[in-house]
Image (cartoon, rainbow, N blue to C red; front, side, top):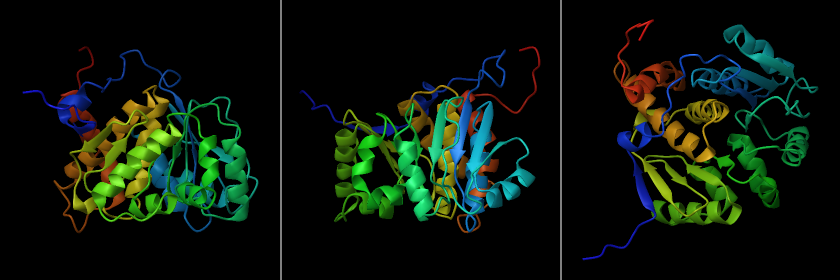
Length: 296
């Protein structure tokens, strides 16, 4: 009997382990990549903090955070490891940062939809040198300016939840129909669509879709998506392809959320718990215990 090949696949520990690349023994911060995060506004500085911390915990060498002074003044107090890039507007994103030195970029968490930010986003889209990660308010700006999506470099990653995706497309009758639309959307625009939710799906430009097998209902909490954006940025900056970064990022995000349940419940889990358990998630992929072996 011949079976018809399907374009639906499961993200399993075995398949993700095959993509995982441990940090080389002689790595340095320059070889681990430089990420650029554009996030935060006066009313939402926490989103920038969560994304930045998740990116730093995901293996990149250096991270630049481009944000208003109001945001950076708060973030730097908790994350002295970041490099600050101050926007000319004190309240929201409005001006382009230097794109020449970074090799990965994420935009959207806590961005807001101020007119200056919409204008700044359009200018960014016209000057992109590589695929980027688009989340949160950057997706909502796309929803109000749908033709701008075609300015994205091929293999850029969009990370909408259900509401954001339906604003980009239209309402769906059920989850399966929404998944099919994400496949069509990814193929049409030659991008990667991470449709967040229980069993998050990753739709690729080639028509394949991967369903995640990690994560739990406790992760349905404010800031969880900001954390995923940071993880994706860290993995992309390290040199993973957009496809592999998407698969690894989604799986690790869910796995870290599962690890957090060792101390938390579904009710008490918050986004910061996911970040705090990223180390455990990486170790599970690496197959190593928490032992210091300086000469292994």
